[in-house]
Each structure stands twice: as C-alpha cells, then as structure tokens.
Image 1 (cartoon, rainbow over the protein chains, first blue to last red):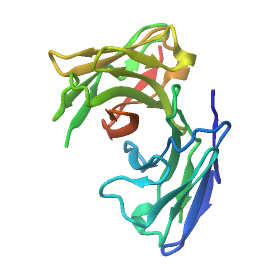
Image 2 (image 1 turned 120 degrees about the vertical axis):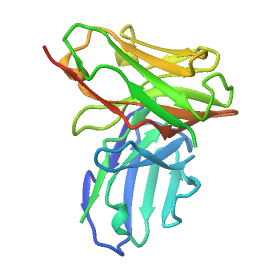
Image 3 (image 1 turned 90 degrees about the vertical axis):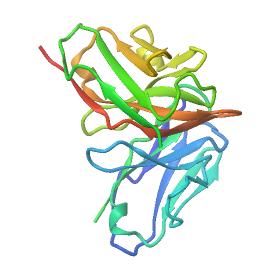
Image 4 (image 1 turned 60 degrees about the vertical axis):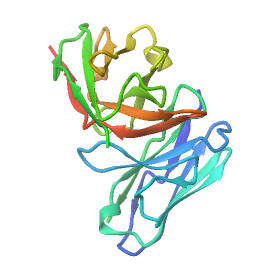
Length: 106
Length: 122
C-alpha cells in the first residue's frame, strides 16, 4: 500500500504568517491528492482535491501544489480560524490513505 | 446541502459486532452521482478509511480489516451501514460516515456526518 507522510507534525505560527505543509507519497499518485482541515471535535472539511483544485467556499489563501509524490498545502496570511489540524489523503486507488496530520498552532 | 447522521451503540464489548447506520437527507443513496463510505479516527490519531459502497452495491474495504467489515446500502430508507465484527480495544474510535461524488472519477469525501464515538470495553 502507498504510504503518505506529512511534515511537520506540528508547527507554531502567528496570524498573518504564511505556512506550508508537505505531504509525500511512497509511490506516484499523479495528482489524486486531497487536503482536509479538522478542528477539535469536528468532522474533517475538504479543502482541496486533485492536488490544487479549491473547493467552493474555501478561502483563496489556501492553495495546493504538486504531483507525483510530493505535494504542498500553503496557507497565506494565516487567520485565527485556520488554527487546526490538516490531513492529506491519496485517492488514486483503494485503499485510501491519510497522512498523519499537521497541527497548526499558535 | 445534504446531511448525514450516524447512529449506533456508543459501547461495544470485546469480540462483539459493531453495527452503525448512516441516515442520509438531501441526497439519494441510490443516485449514480454519489458513493458513500466510512472513516474512523482513534483518539488522538489520524483518519483511517474503512470502506466505500456505490449505488450499484459494489464495495471496497480496508485490506487490514478485510474479513471483518461489511458496508451496505438500504435504498428504501436512504441509509447505508457499517458492520465490523470481532471488535477489540484497537477499534475504539470516532466513526464518520461520508459522501463523495462519483462520475468519471471517484472524488474524495466532501460531505461528512458529525461522527459517533464507539468505545470497546467490557
């Protein structure tokens, strides 16, 4: 099975910062990568699919890049509402796999 | 906006079978535009995809759980189900049901239920 590795596992940031989270796949998944945001006690929220396609209603400060095995999620001008845990997920083929998560904290 | 709601026991004894129901409103489980699935999250850990079911009834499931997991649909009641046998403490988690769009491609889950905590304990 393809493994998904996120880094860092935790990052400290301030409002207004630009942060980048990396997700690496153990084999090529082309662009079949999604990013989710999860807040404590809540279900994940889909932010981006196909590596860079922003979901409707997701602020444009979120952006995704990459293909093959290396992907990034960038949050520009971090807002208070963005402090959360972010997960990548590959969906090129079953079984689907999530990364270990990156917690963005103040 | 469609809504999904999980229901089932919050406490299961070791070796017993977990049965969860996801009731869907605002979308039809019988639609060929969607597929349905289950994801779980043990406390403090990452998400784990459990299985998915399509309008046709075809399913895919997590290899590590194969033999224990069944995902199915009930189109008459607009619900879908998760059945997980031989529960152990390692299966303690928040269980989410979710929906994804299905067309030329199988898209990731974009609508989720609120989740239900299932604890395995005697």
